Length: 379
Image 1 (cartoon, rainbow, N blue to C red):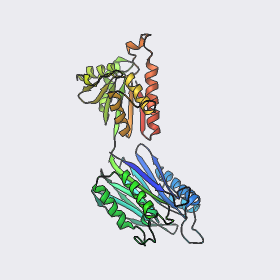
Image 2 (cartoon, rainbow, N blue to C red):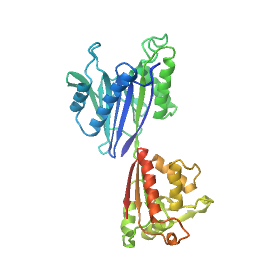
Image 3 (cartoon, rainbow, N blue to C red):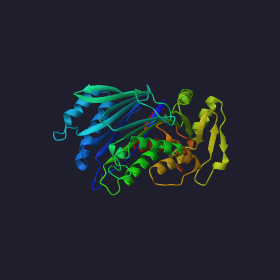
């Protein structure tokens, strides 16, 4: 299954406090909707118009409303400018469904939409539809890993307009050459959109220029991490829970020595400790066939939480490996067992079951705030 990383950058028109171009993003477990809109004019007025347009289009497409309803709602809210006879805002909206691997694109008076596959610009097959007398262009395709969709307002294509070097603006052909050159040097889609905005700033130096926004949707394999923390409260469910854990797609992490022992007992796979990874504040990690990482439990998870919440920067080796996997993940699933480690019943230990649950919940909240899909099962 694929997902897409969304990167964007923008610049204000010289002398304006806000950008008149807007991007809105809405993500769910099986879909992501993105809209870029350019409001008529610049500054606050344009920002309000583009924000309204992008918000409506993104929310409605995400919630499975048809293009007719989306466009009619936008046009009813933003009629044509009576003076100039053009729309108050244009837009390019996309909806990607991961379950069907289908990317839908709708363009209304939008200047630059480019799709790159295998280092070559892929011509979109567009269908023109008329809604309320307005021409909308629709495209549907099935992305492949590594594909990139670039969406840019005319602040990029018209950068440098009226200058000796680019009297008609930078233009789409130059944008294409710039992108392919940057891809040749293996710049990421995020680096490319930032470069394009910097390019527009340089070309507009000394002239008023315009608002500009560049966005990129980069398609890659969906990354999932599954973490088992603690054995089930009922030992009779050990086999059920371990089999459930092993059946999950994605990276698998075991946190806790007792948890690793239960998995080892059920699978017959031995845990091998890597004593080279031990430190003063961090127990060693372990390896088990079929498992990506085995670590100690509460100490390691607490370090993960404190790092993610910005309390500390230095963590043990096991915690650093978990953090790396979590930061790259799109989805994180916890299986939390209710068994109490006998060591925790010792009054000399301050850790208990409630702390383990609390730490997992705190980590989950931080990951959700970063836009990741997080779920927790309790056993």
